[in-house]
Image 1 (cartoon, rainbow, N blue to C red):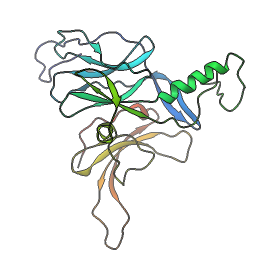
Image 2 (cartoon, one colour):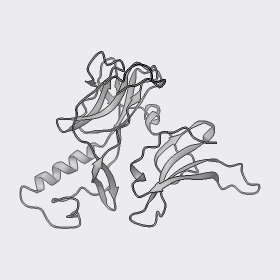
Image 3 (cartoon, rainbow, N blue to C red):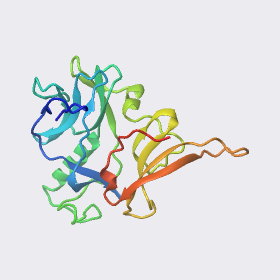
Length: 244
């Protein structure tokens, strides 16, 4: 739905339908554990305001779709990657998007499917509370594709294009930070576990910016302010105006 901020006019439905998208997260050696609740889907306006891009799942695959803000034309699928699209970002000129995916997940799932033809080995890949078959383990690299709106043909994204989606992290942002959002004047916000040494921990929102250097010290430092925390805060996407 699209509604005017000033409250005038009626809301416009720009898309309807799609399948349930389960949220997922890595746990211990498991590559991906699927949760019992939905993944937050955050639509993103193109910088020129002419389109809205969002993730939608149809026929067992999650891809990037485009919607007309006026509702005059039906939403259409933009990407047709062989694996699920996980995240995306617009280019500054609104001519294309960079999309992240993990082809290794599909390959690992295929290997497990093939193994099942002869019977599964009940080993450390099993966790019965999550699945009735082995769960993929190990690291799976993220791949980035560039998709032009002109021809909709994907290609490997350049490093500069990848930084539209995953900008370089400031030195004061910890490795455990997730959903990093960088704002003006060097300030950033992210999600992090309150107790990173624990297997399961409540999550909190942190906003921070670089502090003036301390005389005689070369260590990086940051001024931090802690926001809301809780056991379900981990699914909140950091989309906010950063405080100073």
